[in-house]
Length: 89
Picture 1 (cartoon, rainbow, N blue to C red):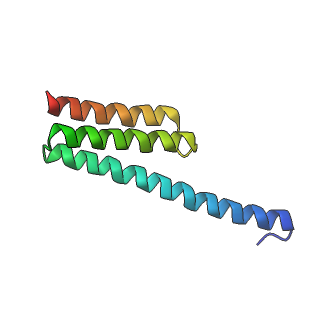
Picture 2 (cartoon, helix red, strand yellow):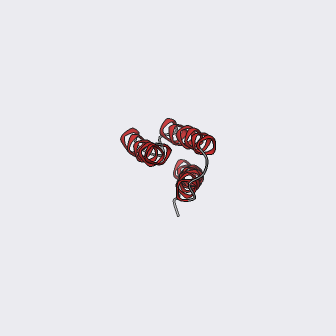
């Protein structure tokens, strides 16, 4: 355990940031999984597009909060778009 007041504060801030980052990442993973499940179920086009928009929004929020790197986000978005494009055709 740190002795200095500033170090104690840093430990608290780090713990809070870790919790927040985990919450944001889990929300992103959840919506991506929902989208993939909808693709597997061959859901209708409207539902897929709504889920894709939600996934994009969540992924972009994570980039803005610097939870994930922008290239990682681009890769995730590209994979989802390919999945849905293959099904919608």
